[in-house]
Length: 209
Image 1 (tube, rainbow, N blue to C red):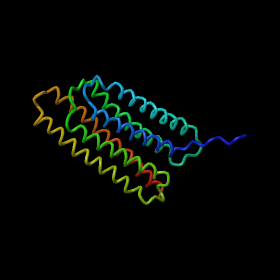
Image 2 (image 1 turned 180 degrees about the vertical axis):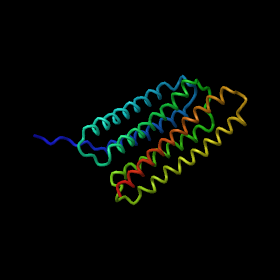
Image 3 (image 1 turned 45 degrees about the horizontal axis):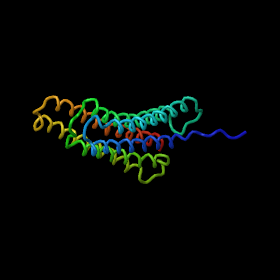
Image 4 (image 1 turned 135 degrees about the vertical axis):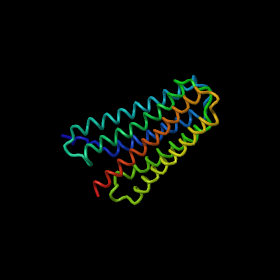
């Protein structure tokens, strides 16, 4: 009888982080090529397909961890890490959906800077996730986690700047202020979600040294 294939949790985590990078790339594409909200349907469909793939990986992790006798790290940490990774993909997709739902007629000049910061956060997290498999021996893992946290701090500063600008310089249209305040809030949450993953990985490292 052939040996049953062992589920690789670290491989699944890497798939999730790679999907987050792809979703961030779609967000930048949506912003750079924006003309009208109505024209976002194609890219939203691609983003949703990616989000669905992420959900499938997340569900596979949950299903396996519920029945595995032995896991490489604590079950609670596996569940938390997988869910936080899935949140990143969900939040990025949500930004694109808000462009469409709110029927935005122009792309705010600070949106691309924020999207690039989200992509940098996801890329740093993706690199850290590749090292996560061997986190006890890796010489770069800790610095990669620091990089993610640094980008989150940059996102906090950018969020404060753009929200203040909305209310002091771009306040001629109250509805526009409301719409973009909510969009930027969701963009900031994307970077927060990356930090949550990084913090969870750091906690796992401390538990296993």
